[in-house]
Amino acid sequence: MSERIPRIKTGIEGLDILTGGGFPAGRTYLVAGGAGTGKTIMSLQYVYGGVRYGDSSVYVTIDESPDHILEDAHSIGWDLEKLIDENKLLMVEITPLFSDAMKIDADKILDELKGLISQVNARRLVIDPIAPLILRGMEMMDLMAAQMVVRNYIRRLIMGLDGFNVTTLATSEIPTGTNKLSRYGVEEFLASGVVVLGLRRMNGNFVRELYIRKMRGVNHSLNICNFVIQYGKGIVIPI
Ligand SMILES: Nc1ncnc2c1ncn2[C@@H]1O[C@H](COP(=O)(O)OP(=O)(O)OP(=O)(O)O)[C@@H](O)[C@H]1O
Ligand SMILES: [Mg+2]
Image 1 (cartoon, rainbow, N blue to C red):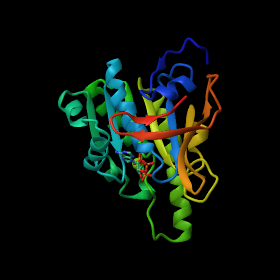
Image 2 (image 1 turned 90 degrees about the vertical axis):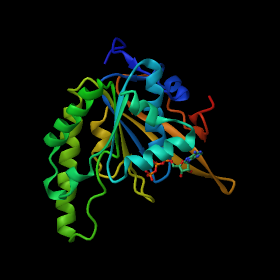
Image 3 (image 1 turned 45 degrees about the vertical axis):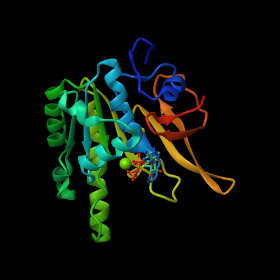
Image 4 (image 1 turned 30 degrees about the horizontal axis):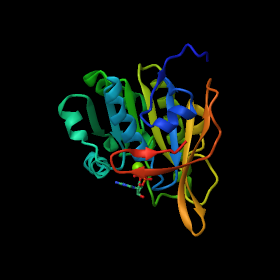
């Protein structure tokens, strides 16, 4: 990739410094981290910050209601309802499309996303999270088969998204207690970039940290940066 590819500012100042000006536009990026590490807040900041650059967004949730996400945004001081009213943001829950784990249809989801994107002329897309937590209580064999289906879905989804004219952030949960980068093991290879969020134990407390694990075509920093979540600002990386 050459430096001719335009960059999209994430709205997270420190992150834009670490990448030397933002993410290469038009591709799909993974925000990976364990539970409560700030994946949703980073995604909300990407959308909220996009307005400053004249970008509208689609925010798709799975396994969590848009109302809860709007409340999370309020707790930071961001009024997303206003953006929805102004037609700059669409928030949609697509969990019903995953009601049967064995029949997840990437093409159907891509079609749905395409329609949503054109409704608000979105340049930014968030998928939070990229895949559902697959059904619990299944037989071991079924679980493995379901994981195959989900892997396949992720592969087709990311490839399909790259054909749309949007820059996508997709969140991916890293199961607690593993040193994996993603839940299904394919997300990090398929995405054009990966930002990893985490909590590190320090002097008996936890501190938040993030690093850029990969970003194709970008001479990015590999620093592990501490960050905080602040009212009115969201993620702040002191650099
Ligand atoms: N208004 C706020 N001010 C400061 N910190 C906050 C605020 N709201 C949430 N947090 C912190 O951020 C964490 C949650 O961040 P977020 O919801 O983005 O995590 P997540 O990675 O999306 O989690 P999950 O895996 O459950 O979806 C909370 O656990 C809390 O520690
Ligand atoms: Mg979340």
